[in-house]
Length: 552
Image 1: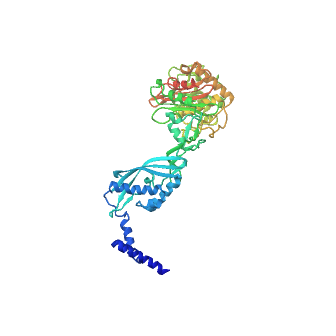
Image 2: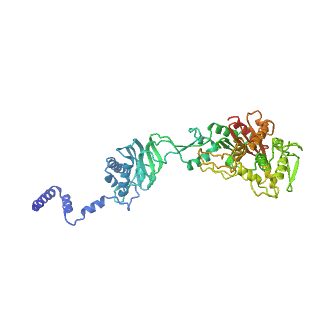
Image 3: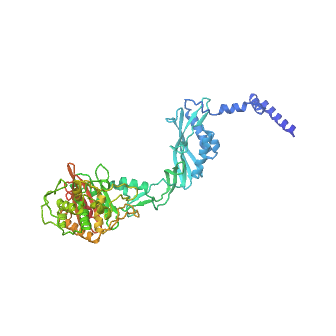
């Protein structure tokens, strides 16, 4: 048997020698034990990545190699295709991952054309082509390109990186087809109607971004297509959509119609471009229905921490009723000026002195000296001036609120340990007392709803409670007094004639200017507004509040 094989080989060799001359000699050498001719031939044909020529290969050669590479790839002869690259091991693995990730059915290439020297890979010729891939869910087409280099021995190779699979694909990224992965679509932050995208409102841009980052979306359906995923399998970018999904949503408490009004209200022409902020609440639930602001210093509706001026007289009155047992008819003499703890206080211009004034009358015209006199007399005991702080915390829920979705708000402050002139100034919303439109809207809501409901912007968000509910007696007193402010008091120029409205104006001194405040409610909402630089509450914030009350 062995002898027969040897004869066959010898016979063949002889024939080749007859017809092949020197070529036949090389074949004989290939079969000879210990020869290195075959290895040398392979080495002569192989691309040497350590000896890359600085001269790009010709267009024709580059196209020919690329076509061979693409033919092998399209026929799924992946090892053969990988051998046409300068990194066959990495290429073979990536080509298999491409087929697996896309659930590839067929692959075709057209328009294989040279684009001349590559501007990205030095010493390479760029070859472009169009890709058509039938993948899970549909057919995907895209333009692509490779860079072809040559080594000094004249051999060519496709320069391998992940962008061979898809332009711009990173080394730690891959492709997937079928159900689109999480992260390739963004949840919509919507109004309470479940439809209106709040990103359309300029005042809510930052709030929407924060809520989207922190809150959990619900609903939605996943679409199908082609996407880029990272090493963890999370979606990076959608490349092709075969069937659209429905983005998940994060529903808020915002009323889209009222938000539209608020956006317009803070830009009312009467404000002459002054920074303004407003918040509207549903006083039954504490839900934030609208929130708008202007100005360059951030969202002053929820973070504009300023002295609230005479709007704090709502809390001062509540403390006088709850802690001193007074009523709206209790005396509260209104004088031109008053000295308390060596500090001189005065009234706003237009407030006439009235020695026989009651708390209700002083509230209607916003007499500062009346509230300082009664507050200092009834609510400060042996230097302890913490009564207003206790009323704010225990009845009106003042504290560190979380309105939901990670949205930061600035806490109001009515310190418990005020000293000196601040002991009197606190009763008219000056000194160390600070608040935001959000807090003052909540104060009005507590009066109208006869109870504190902590403001929230996400339905279902935890709401802090007040240690002690406001009494029906105190709430009734305050409602009556706030109603008079709207019908015949300081808020009448803006709110007179509106049904079921209660209000309180405020003007607070700050440095060389004043800030205008107004807080009010009607049968549906409680609202507060602040205008920085407003000459008075009614002639600045009053315009903002009127917009909202007449639209709800």
